[in-house]
Length: 249
Ligand code: 3Y8
Ligand code: NAP
Image (cartoon, rainbow, N blue to C red; front, side, top):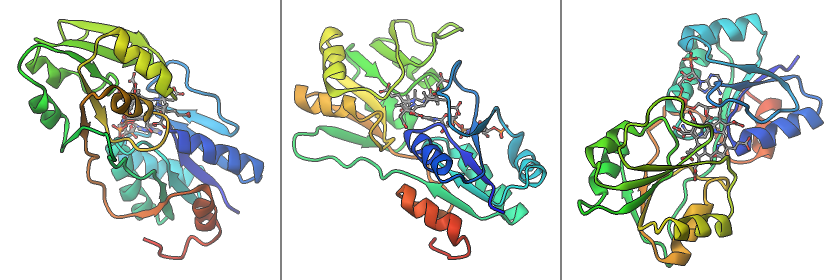
């Protein structure tokens, strides 16, 4: 009997949750518990960490999970690595549901950097208004360049003190629109944007707005992940659920 653990937190995960519910497939949706009020899902939902790979193995066994779909964000690297390890240990088939990275096109002025440190290094030395659109978890390294006025967009109000001296905070939850992001960039006189190469549609608006306004983007590459089966569509995930034995790695 199929019972799926869906590691969520992205647009694709929510899309897949709707498809699994519509197909009447038994599934558990999992959030890390990063935000105060995550979007409701049409599946039974658990919130919080598993307690590392060992905790995930216990969950797989106790919940009788037959398949795991890792639909977490490309930058949720620890979760993805733990899923590969735990599914190997528990011998449970795993498939990632992942969106392709964004690729620059005509009119884009993107500077690709390998990681957060690379993004800090790529920022100019002269003070500038910067839209730091990477969320809340990776702000500390930017304290190395305190001279900039940082516009931050966070899902929830920042409880603790922010590590940057000159910030303006916007509380908003995506998905965002190009018009809305263009207005945000203009209102704050933004001269450079820092973003993760998240892929997908929910965070792309700021890149489209940057192109329209002729602004440079410092784009952070995704962290490397272990080899695992990857699906690029709901149909491919459904095929994995029907035929988990196929390699398709
Ligand atoms: C908790 C669940 C859905 C999922 C929607 C997607 C799109 C909107 C755009 C900007 C970039 C950013 C951030 C972002 C987007 C989607 C998706 C996406 C980027 C929620 C959600 C959870 C999170 C966690 C949160 C992180 C933060 C990152 C904000 C829910 C809303 C910057 C990533 O305060 C914190 O601690 C927030 C942490 C991880 C990155 C960071 O390091 O701070 N997402 N985002 C999930 C959980 O608990 O398991 O609250 O409903 C989901 C979504 N956020 O169902 O429609 O699919 O990517 N999320 C980035 O891309 O750089 C915002 O502002 O332009
Ligand atoms: P991460 O750094 O890869 O994971 C850190 C720990 O958080 C994991 O080891 C695990 O804890 C727990 N965790 C992460 N995702 C989980 C999930 N879906 N269900 C249960 N536990 C989870 O993760 P992150 O980058 O903070 O991302 C957390 C959540 O936000 C994920 O759902 C992700 O899809 C979503 N998200 C992240 C980003 C981003 O930019 N990173 C963007 C959009 C959405 P244990 O070790 O205790 O098991």
